[in-house]
Structures are given as structure tokens and as C-alpha cells.
Length: 366
Image (tube, rainbow, N blue to C red; front, side):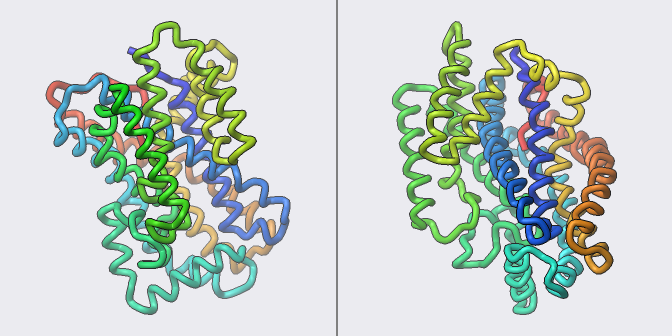
């Protein structure tokens, strides 16, 4: 069985790119140093690659497993929800202090101040129970801003993608089964194109991010098609370089293709022997990859908590440097602990639900 260790190792790098993005945003670095704006782009592309990886991984697992829908969706729930609820509760408790720190002075980035103002107003108007209820059932990404402002990331900003993942998990078996035939693959491709057109034109409502499945289905489908192609085509080594060239050419048309190019570059590492591929397969990178979900979720309460404490004492880039040092010290330990005591027990419980047992994998979707 192919293990695709490089993908698990790459998840560690992607998670820390998201941390860098939010560190710059939350500490007002772009206001103190405008050049810091260039540090934001990699985080957005990293999330897009995460979404493609999820399509690939779920397809990989479904091809290897004959389990029915009920144990499948129960195991997906147990994989993402226990760690998520820990991060959600922590972020919810920290939120009032973070909002106070952001709104009490002018150090914060205008984007963050705008979101903080919206959130503080919603709390004052008694709308937080609706937000929290949607977060509890992982459907907050479905609600557009014109219905409930900032629904996608009210309490735990990175979790907009978790809501998107959950929407995908609910329909993934049907999508993957359909995509295994030529006609079905064409149908899935057409649906993904219709979805992104509908999202881009605002037909689904106003969203700051593609947190509703139609808006991001095309990214999941790229991952699904990549895995299905690996299964069906012999001598597949031509796929990665050819697809990478096509994706790089697409960069001339849309910046979204940068994430696609990065994905196929990563796929190339699974097919060719390279120093970077060996690094991603190393035991250390595999451990970091295992902890990447915790890094992705917990960095938000850690960063917002640090900002709430440090903002009254530090200003400008000093706040950024302090938070960067603290998050680098705290987050790896916290991610390791949540993996050991929350994620792993839930994963093992989920595996016991499968009859027959699912073949072991070296990575799991987030």
C-alpha cells in the first residue's frame, strides 16, 4: 500500500505557514511594518493545499476501505471533533479579553479591528448563542455574512476550514464513488465548476472565505482526481510533472493556481527521489505532521491569549517578536499533548467502529 509520507510531512510546514499568517495579522505587524504584508499570502495558499490534501486522503481511505457510511462518518467525526471542541472552548473563553485588547487602542491592523468591532457588537446584541450553536455542530461555515456576520470565524477563526471539511466528509463517499466512472468524473467536474461560479458571483450569499462546500469543491476534486489517477494509470510518473506544468501555466491566469501548482509539486516528491522528499519522509517531519492538526487549531487561542496579555505592555514589532517567541515555545508542546491525550484516543475509538478494520494509514485528514 502506498503511504505518501511526504504529504504527512508537508502538513507540518503548511500548518506553520498558517500560524505565521495569523501572527502577522493579530499582532498588527502590517501596521508597524508594511512589508510584513508579504508574509500573509503563504498562509492562504497553505489552507488551499490542505483542502486538496483532504480530498486526496479521503479518496485514498475510501479506496482501501469497504466500510459502510455510518462507521465512516463516525470515525471522521471522532478524528476532528474532540480536538476542535477543546480549541473552541479555549478561544471562546479568551475572546472577550482579546476584543478588549484590540479595541482599547489603535495598534491593531484595520482588518482585525473591523472583525473585532463586528464581534463585540454581536455579543452586545445577544447574538453569541446563535454563533456558538453553529460552531458546536460545525456548520458555521454555511451561513453567509449577510445573514449572520462573521459566522465563518466568530470564535475560532481557523475552524472555518473545519466546517468546510465536515461538509465535504458528509458527501465524500458519494462524490468518490461517482468520480470513479468516466461519466461520473465529468459530472463531478461540472458540479465543481458550477459551485465555484455560484460562489464567486455571490449567488450563495456573502462570504469572506470559501467556507461553504460549493465554493471550495473544486479543490477537493483536484485531490480526489489525483488519487484516482494514481490508482488507474500504470507508469504514472508522467502525471506529476505534466500536471505541474499545466498548473504553473494557470498561474498566469489566476493566483488560485499557485496552490494547485504547490500541490502537484508535492505530488512530484512522492514519485521522485529528491532531498526534499527525503526530508519530508524523515521521522522528525512525520512527528511534526502528526501534530499539525493541533498546531492548526490551537495556535488561535494561544495567539489571541498572548495578544490579550501582551498588547498593553508591548507596541509595534515588539509585540510581534514577543508573541512569535512565546508561540514557538508553547505551541509545539500543546500540540503534542492534544495529539497524545485527545486525538489519538479518539482515533483509536473510531477505528474500533470499523468492521473490518481499516488498513493503517500514515496520515489522517484534517
